[in-house]
Image (cartoon, rainbow, N blue to C red; front, side, top):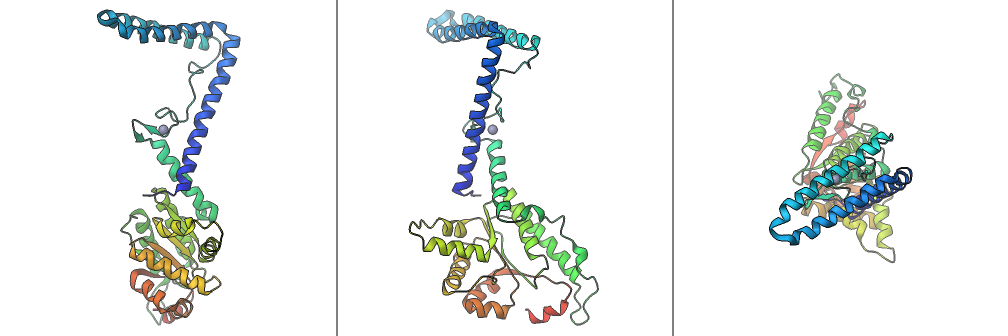
Length: 326
Ligand SMILES: [Zn+2]
């Protein structure tokens, strides 16, 4: 599981924000309360005294233990008096506690040297939100993938029912997303336009990101133009390329819709080849047939995809298209 630098930084910033907000709230409440109820400030001053006395008591040797336990009970009494005073004046008992979002780690994101659950949750949420900001991912789930859209009767020529095939594909994608890991296969989703390839890629992206993996999802057009911008920018730090080559799951939507240049052909080959060599999964969706793919990206690219990816052919109304494919 690897989150990008930006995601980690965002989580740290949000936690810092929560922490300082909680502290500001507590300060404001403290001012309000001590103004209305000056006796609270007096109890607090006594609390400070007992605290200091405890520190000093550690140097007392043998008699320290009894003295410290006496101080502790005074301390507890004072805290109870403060709570009761607050309550008697219409405040909640814990009104002067710092209202951290996470009490366990006091919004630091770490407790006892371990990453707190709140930070793990936050990272998942940020990864998912990043995904949603580039796509309609939130609307595309496995649950709202409508299988009724696909014709049930088997095609006369091929004997294949589109609905049956698509139910299998839906099931396959669901399992793929739930069991996703570094060992997962790459997928090649192909078929005519409008058959749900984007919907299912996004549904996979959502589930995989929710499990804490770094998912990059975008159209081929956007991925390639951002790589091109980076390559020709003055302060090229290769960050975008690194993200695309290193993320846990890369989803390239609508491969072939982009304007083709020498750069895009080379970049597509580099992405597919590098990730295949590093055994990092990719999901490609395309409307192109094998021949069209070959014409556009050369046989070198196509053979990597055909040989290395699990092929899922999407079927729909015009089932005869199957004959023009593999
Ligand atoms: Zn926490």
